[in-house]
Length: 511
Image (cartoon, rainbow, N blue to C red; front, top):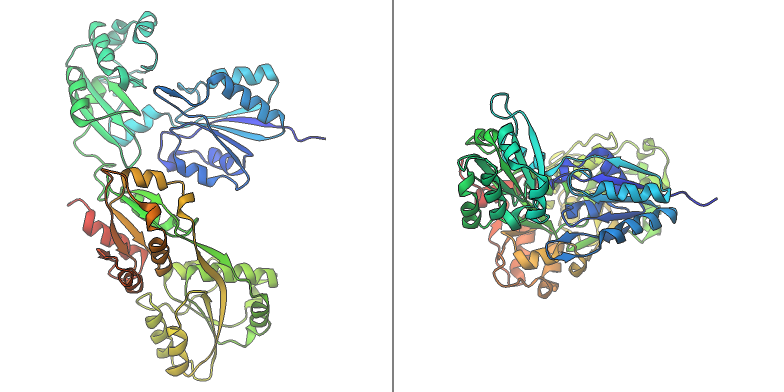
């Protein structure tokens, strides 16, 4: 019996990756086919399964990538082939998302479907801009309008005089290309030219911009500030209650763009830390982590695992790969034995703690030298067996110090190797070339070497923002300098929190 397909018509929210619903995120990560619009946050695409088919049907003014009739036909065909299809739309699928048209076609074809609502753009953009849409004394209704179709056609169906009489708030989608005509029609329909108004462009994203002013000044303000699509236009008395504070745009790194270069799937904490400060983060993975291929060495280490007094994890990557291998060999964490555990830093320790194992030692500074000194200071190394978990590019200084100063018997186990990623395959590469960034952030010497190797592929276009080079620590800085590159910023201590603090000190707004 063939697999029965289904279509989910899903709202992705207005842009901020955190505003998508849990149900929508689960569907994106498990679907066979993802059909998406141009206003979808590209980060959602990275959450799909490796075998998922991605189909871009996005529309922009003056360019129709795929006609609506073709989109509907595609949804039917993909579902009838037995696929779980997600039709991902910006905002909410029922608010100017043409969901009704697609739903009708699916009904006619007998294709099963579900609707997953999303935060619509007007509500999300207003909230992130601090613009109230209702107030018990100033606005008791909200109207959603579209400025995308011909203004004359819209005027035949909408009595703008009635909107003036209701005293509610107008939320106008897709109206920037005809802003002047829309303003003229509203005033001609009876709205006072002093009516409070606003425009929010790229709402809920780090590139968000807004203007506030009387309706008569809206066109001039938009031109002066260079606001463009995508944007929502707001008109109404409640809009005038917008406060002077701006919780979203007042964050210290708002408006800044940073490029992180860590491997795919390992930027999450750094990215979140920067985004919480208001920054826009581009991911250009310059290295990739590959599992160990020396099965004999791994088997030997695991065979004698109960003989070690200490196990030392020198990186989070090493900890992850070690436990991947460990649970292939053993089915029970109790097989880990009585070893004491040392980790180079808190990020590495958090990986180990996920298995309910206690980390006994973390050096005050996350370097190999400090890790070795902290271990020696325990006075527990003399003739002790120590297992050091490493990668293919780890330096020997840790092992040398443990053996020469601590008099330990050290075995090393390389559980992963680091290789250069092909940056030309990075989804954010063209965005980086066109717009640049404030800083390129290197968290390892391997990423720095990969950058040197592929620098020609990262050439910026004219007028793009030229980034400074930012380093995670002294070793990474040394690698950059050895290759003729200047290091403009180095974290005070080699940790993600210190790195973010350094970026805030360099680029942050004064409080």
